[in-house]
Length: 165
Image (cartoon, rainbow, N blue to C red; front, side, top):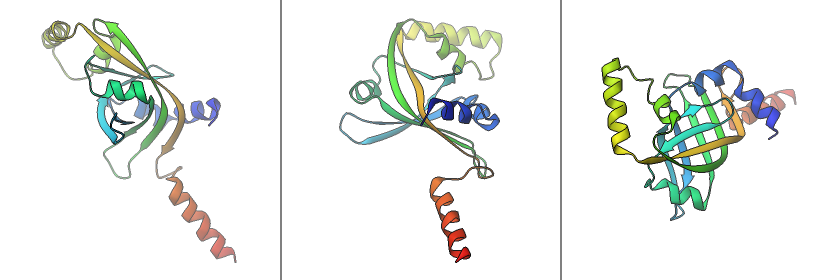
């Protein structure tokens, strides 16, 4: 998929709404070769998905071995709005707490006092974290109004061909 196609999909209003959400599902291959899919907080910086995790997270050896990942960001209503992404995870070990981690977890309703306590607790727990940065190499938006799953599009095309004969 060409970068301009990815940009066009990600710039659609529904995609932008989905990219403003706070949870995605990260799919990757574990070190034992089995698939994993986990919910994880994220932020979108305009060109990349940024995830943050502990330095001892089980997913890190797997991502170092095979950095190819898939992400799903979707809604809980029917019909769902679904943004599917693929990319390559780049791992960035950082000292302290990444600003993205504070940003992605700052969307929860907290009083200023609660926010101060939460940040102090986070800073006392972590001496550093790992930023997982994913640049999309493929994207598909499914909104069930203007876009459908590829298999459904194929069925519609086959039905139309049958009706023409």
